[in-house]
Image (spheres, rainbow, N blue to C red):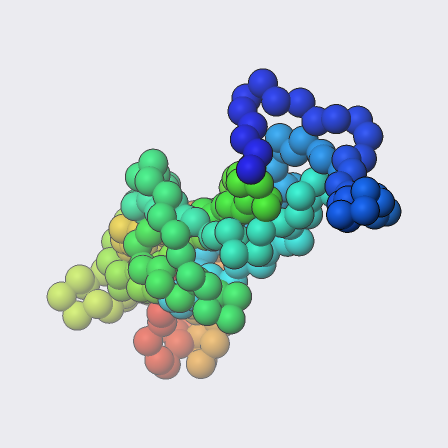
Length: 238
């Protein structure tokens, strides 16, 4: 029965064991080597695509854990851990706590909307040297749509009028004029990424001009401008 401690060093040559019979004859030697192993396995960071996820499943790909020249990887030690964060306005506020997660067919299906997640893998070799990988990219979960935009009409020329009660814009084309439509939507998780203003030059509408800057669209019209026969739309994307 052997014992070893922190100051133990390994012999540089193989060790031998033999047996002697009652007649005093020795057997051939059995040999074995002793190697000190103080280095944990190499553990690559899990692969996660850094993006927003609109379903409650995050693919997490694990790389090959290796222990070249060491005691070998203890397969039963492989563990995936994750850290969660609250997601507000696209910003992650990390909890500082890592917990074990079990993947289902390579996916983390226990995520919840309004949170961020990042992952690492922990592995040990057969003499209990442990290594924690680097962190994966960040997955942000947002399964809810932004609110319906509220619309504000401003910078109306004298021949343009917005009736907020009926959500109707009136104009007198012969004089020509301008107006601006500003959209305001909210998304508490990932914030608003963009606004889309439906074209006025369809469904009978023609000769509207203008340009969009972020959350607003500056329109112009003239004597040849015609009215679309259906309602126009504005929406937001988170």
